[in-house]
Image 1 (spheres, rainbow, N blue to C red):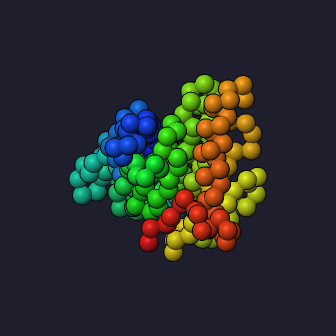
Image 2: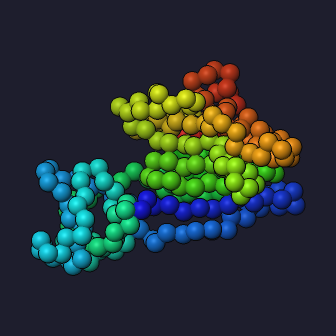
Length: 235
């Protein structure tokens, strides 16, 4: 089970006037910190008890897998859950702190715009339109237009994914841009290629297009768009 939670950003004109945002939590995961598994060989076992015993192994984790630590049991073992949702104990000597794009995530409204910020970046979209974000995994945040999503049309506006500098896996995606660059990561904006709103609802179509028009300016490599890029990297 990936560490995932969802929040909605709902801004009415009256709230905009006061620059106040309402962000009720819709779903919350267990409090945990993400770590990456690092083993020289073999695997790291998730165990039913905090002891080394072949009989208590629940799941095998390998280098690069994510484990979410809820608390330290003792000097050797930590308790938490894997990406598959399996809870148990692991030897914490084989865990290293993982990158988390959503670290410090927060929202606020200012000057008619709704802002989404983490410890690594900030971005804005029109503040008079309902939109929401979802932390998909430690590298990915998905932005959706709420009315279209609730109506079953997806509502996907843009996905922000952090890539290591050595990783060009996004190059084959059909629609993307480089939203921003830091010393450690490339922040790639990934766009939908199909209709994500109710085409028979003129109001939805207009609001979705307004969101997408702003999102598509997330391009630090285009000189014209970079001057009005709604995405900003924090160093």
